[in-house]
Length: 416
Ligand SMILES: [Zn+2]
Ligand SMILES: [Zn+2]
Image (cartoon, rainbow, N blue to C red; front, side, top):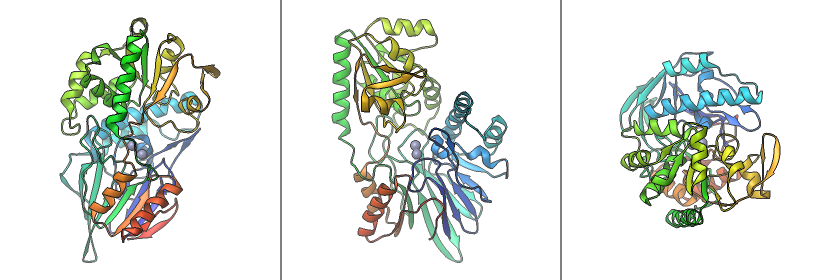
């Protein structure tokens, strides 16, 4: 059997890994967004797609496949609902920016028609192989796939983590460690361990209270999928959700998550939070939200668009901006962290308020990745979804543990 890498190898974005045996399975088929849309380097003939989760770097290019072929796409139910929203949004963004976009509603609809909804721990037949999905602890519906292959009389279990988080978050209890022979693992943060989450949370809540007591607005830009709901749950647990407003695409995603029984471990906290926060639906709501001391959770998490820019321009002096996620190179959020400046409608602006950064990552840190490799029992470890340095770094760790380890690049293939 072979693994072939069409994207997301020694890089983050456009994840696309093919397992090639008697059945050919594409694990994820995503896009990269980096001043333009990047697609996987080619589109080989396949028998099925397995989708680890809804984020566009894993799901964004799946619709394209349906111009050439007609194959089933396996994933969890929330993955299809959330990826539909994200892909529609990416089509809109591409149109607004004037980027060449190869995906339109026709391809998206074909993708939706071919989706096969799975639950965790349920065994599915995919060609000659068996597929079981396990909770990856990353976002709602994220799955670690275990593919049992019987090829030429020998049985092999291939495990693909997708993006994962081993330690618990507010709404997710953390990834399951799945035994396998071959482990394909993400390496986003192979170079660092995240700071203790409880400490970060405590600092975050303390600062929020301080801003409210000073009569300011606590503006919390958050990714629509996962981070916004994590923040809502955190605020709920600290008795702060009744002074919280929710705006942007996070609202739609929250509704999907509330319907996703079995895919959000602590769904009751999210339900309570969603009942006590105020949902913003128009301009008047936005004005009211800014008038009194309050917390506003909204998109975009990297300040690159969305309602957050409306609020930033109108914040009073004693307000504060809380960055809660990784800020990618080239985004407003990154510019702010570097030089206190952002660009709104093409014009550079100085931020009038202070800001701070909190590491609430939904990806495993180095300690969690190491733990996963040790506990999975795999003899072959393939490190993907990370910079070249980080993928190599993790492969070195796996080698030191006695595994056969790889950090392949795009276009390469490995015999497993
Ligand atoms: Zn992800
Ligand atoms: Zn990813």
